[in-house]
Structures are given as structure tokens and as C-alpha cells.
Image 1 (cartoon, rainbow, N blue to C red):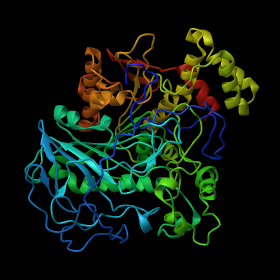
Image 2 (image 1 turned 90 degrees about the vertical axis):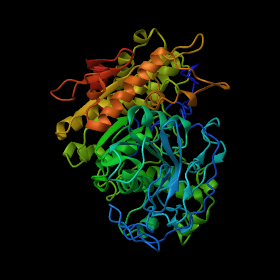
Image 3 (image 1 turned 90 degrees about the horizontal axis):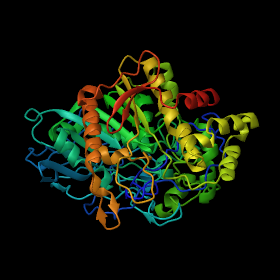
Image 4 (image 1 turned 180 degrees about the vertical axis):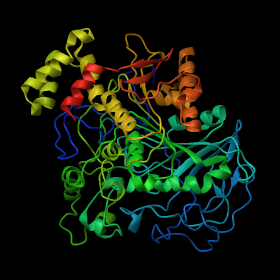
Length: 592
């Protein structure tokens, strides 16, 4: 799939639906038109059906457990029956033993439940513990992705794939054993992207085996509920909650998975006191959501935000723009018991209801996603950062050079001018002209498509990374680092221009080149690909271990002391100061 970039799609690299844009704001939720193109989205791999039955524990999140519980987990929740002794691929967890497999020195555990299936009465509720099991549970095959529209289809009207019973995680580790006998390794917990509407941890792009084997770390990936199933708000749903809130169920899923890591990762050779949380696109939005959530305090100790934002809509804005139109379209708005009506609808019908939040990397609209609810997020994560009320951890923030290259269609000059005017006319025609001057076509070889790629990449990703890094550096003592991923040395077809597009860096972090297909063939990495992968893996795992990517070999400048210090990730990589400074100064003044 790298051949032919930027027209390719990498799996689960969906658009970020929570970025601050010229067309939407935290206060009013107003949107304007963006390009009518589908974003780079999750590639719908064939689901592996979960065959082990799991029953539902319907006790409250604070007290949930199952019969026969004798062990208390580190998060304070009761465990299950007396655990088995760790033995290679047979490992105890707080909910029951699991049995994975070992391959090439890596122990792998797939499709491990971290929460009860959110089905029936548990739909649109906070996640609960799974019911306990006694016999070893097979953890050798991936579970299903969460319910979503098929990203392999053209646009948001494709088939529905996945399953509601999807709250599983995957673990790759070089060693298992009793907690007091195994080496405690850094733990890297990854949150996938996909606009919070598509994507899945089951995608082969996120296979953690190479990272675990080559860098002696423990890698965890996880599924979380998507679109309306993960983020729908409604007063009647809030009335069912002890906290009086609704929505942000997917964020609670992620918190539940982090609690599972705290309770269980030691027998997988991981250090529960050394957890890196990282995510890309919507996964980066979710990562920054947890940076801003008081509920996540102590559950992770370092973070990386890759091509995502930290701003969140108010509850009023979110309900006006997403939840109320969706509930009306569902046909349940006028029912006496709205939650019961919503829970009676088939999941396949739910994910297709408009607005469905289907992501577009280059578009300026917003879809389902984390929002300020007063509980999970008392305030926008950016507001929390600017007031110092966030979770203070060493953090890396960055974006790619040509984020929207895979989503911007070929444009003529009139089309480019019309898009700019339609999107930014709300600020006045003087501002529209300033934007046209700032992105004058002669700066881009006369190519309006290149100009629009630069404009949308700056507004949605590049300038946002600078804004986040500056806010973090000003409001915490822990180190902050910024990167700008500019690598475009992969192999491409004739008459095509390589771009550092949205999500490209993932193949290098995970070294999962075999997940990239060129027709029926696996992509074969060239020498520069392998060097870029080594650079990124060294930096990411060094940050996981000590909170400083410089330990990986490159000397990363810390984001402190003014300016815009960053690491330009390329072959070769080098430190710099300032990324698109004139453009980002303009956008910061226009979109404070």
C-alpha cells in the first residue's frame, strides 16, 4: 500500500474529529464545509470470532466482581478465584487464567477481556468487570473489532462489521512469570485511531511482537467502543448514572483497560509503575483526554500524542451538534423510555444512523468523541493543561509533514479558492485573502492541491502540536518534547510523489511492514525504511523507559526556554527550531 502514496490507506489511521479548526470551536460547535472526501480510515480485516462465552457481571463499577473472589487487585476491585501459577504462555489475571502462545521469543496473548460485554442493559453504560472464569481461557486468536462501518468501503455507507462484545486487549511480552521473579519492563499501551468511529486494535498494523522482542518492552493494544455506542449523551442516560452524566463511555473503556494493566501486567513482565500511554489521530485525542482527566491519575507515567488534539467541546455544544440530531434520527426521541428504545435497536442500525461521525482527515467537521461532561472531563484537556490541572507526565507531541495528503482530492485553482472562501468566510473576506496570500500557489510549485494539503495539515495538526507543546511546557516541570515527522523515503510507484501523510509513522513504530499490501504482496522495506523504524522505535521505547527519547541515541531538544525546538524525524533525523512558524503564528492569532 505504500506504493502509490499518497492515495493509499493505512489501516486505522482515521481522521481526528476533535481538533480545533477554523470551522468549529469548543464553545459553539459551529461547522462549515470542508472537502467532500472520505478520510484515510480503518482497513476492515476479517474479524476473528470470539468463541469463548463470557457472561455479564451487572454490579456497579465501584463494587463489581464475581462469585468466588478471593484476591484484591491493586486498583481496589476484587479479583476472582485463586490464580494459577504463571507457566510460560499460561498466565493468571484478576478475572481468570489465560493461555496464549510463544513465537520467536515473544509471548502473545490476544482477545483478553478487560470488561464485561457492553450489550443489552450494559449498552450506553460505564464498563464493568467481566465475569470470572476458572478454566484457562484461549488467548491465541484476536477477538472482533468493535461495531463500525466498514472502512474498506467507499465512504461511510459501507457494510457494518464488528461486534458489540469487543472490549478486549492484546499483550506482547518477552517474559512471563511470578511477579517477584520476572524483570520489570516498561509497558507501552497504544490507543488506535479512526476518528473515534472506526479502527481496531486487531489491525495487523498494530502487532506489538517486533517492538516487544527487539526492545525488551511489554506492548498492550486495546479496543474501545466507537461512535454513538462510545460517546452518545442524553439526559435520560445521564439519569441512570450515579455521577449524573452520560457519554464518554469509550474513555471509561480506556480507563478500565489501564486499570487492568495496573492489576495484571506484572506477571507479564511489565512494570505497573512505568506505563507509557500513546496514540495516533483519534487515539492521540483520547491520550490527551486522559492527560486531562482526573480519573486517569496514576494509571500512566509518560505519554505520546501523535497527530491529535487536546481541545474538547462543551456538553451543550456536543449535544446540540451530535447527540440530539442522532437521537432524533434514531426514532427514539419521542419515546417515554429513550434508553430502552436505544438498547432495543440492533447495533448494525445504530452505527449507520446519521450523523455517524465517519472520519475525514482533511475535513473540518467534528463527529463523536470525548467531550466535557463534568466527571470524566471536568474541563477541556487543553484548559486543564493551561491551568496546570492535568496529569503531569513526561510527554512527546508531534505531527506529520503532509497529514492530509491522502485525503485531499486533486484541486484546480478555482476549486482551491472556493474551498478557502467557503471555510473561512465566517472570519471576513480580509482574512480569506490573508489565507490565500499565506498559502500562495507559487510557494507550492503552482499546485493548488499541494497548497491545500499544507493549509489543512497546518490547521488540523502541525500548528496544534506547537500549541499543545507550548501549553505543556509552561505548566509542568516534567519534560516536554516535540517531533515533526517528515520521512518520505519509502518505495513508491512511477509518477507518484511520496508524502509524510497521516498515520505513516505507525508502520515504523511497530515495524509492521507486512501489514502493508501492494496488491497481493507484502511491502518490502528499503534500507531507509529500516533506519527510520530503528530511529522511531529507539526513541519511543527510550521515552517509555526513562521519559526522555534522547536515551534512544538522538539528542532531542527539550521544549523549554522559548522558541519551537523539535526533532525532525527523517533519514537522517536532526534537531531544529521552528516548524512553519509564519503559518502557525497566523493560525494562533486567528484561532486562539
